[in-house]
Image (cartoon, rainbow, N blue to C red; front, top):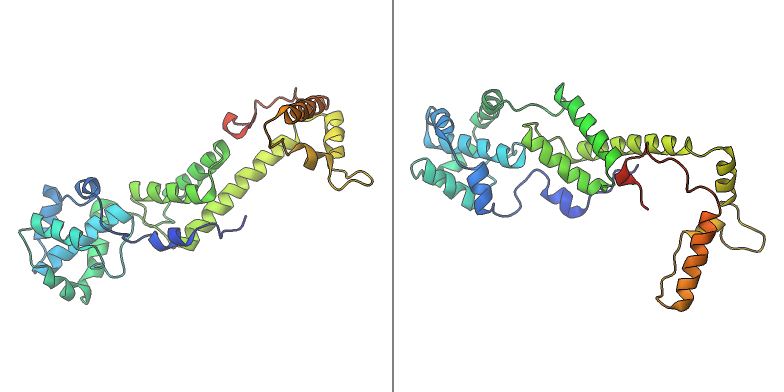
Length: 256
């Protein structure tokens, strides 16, 4: 499966701020509890305290650390400074160019249990979750990508590069689809297989196969179209494939 399924907007918003967080998001991801404040207040200098707070809340919200930890909306800075004793936000420039920010990312990972993308057994659990979801649902790869991103942030697994995650989603969906096709191909008996294969043939002087003709239902709503639809249904039923047992196929993947 090709991995170029992400829209430009999805790639642009991946792993970074896209506008200001809502009031609900501020309360959920950017509120500092007593343990957070205790860790932050042990840092020397206002720039380190505010910078650590920004990195901690950013990884909670986005699921990743920013190369420039100060590249956040002003609303976020104001919300944190109000919790940390009205610190002067101008000190962030000093934090942006300091090497301490890298020490803080390591500290946050250690204290709050954040893991790298390929850490086991979490990576294996992610692949299993992706496979099960791809098997049971018919979600598009772009939707599955967004759901996976949210799951990683929720489980404190740092986001990988956008192409790495896209390739994983595509490869797991392909594996799930191949398994589904394998199961489907084993369901018809020999006679039904012969009937189904004949549907792919293009008869002499015809432009389309029988399958191509039957897969398109009437588009107009009138008496003639109704008659065409009834004849189409009768022809499909005459193939004798309606009794194929689909119990091995997830109900969500069967379109009746």
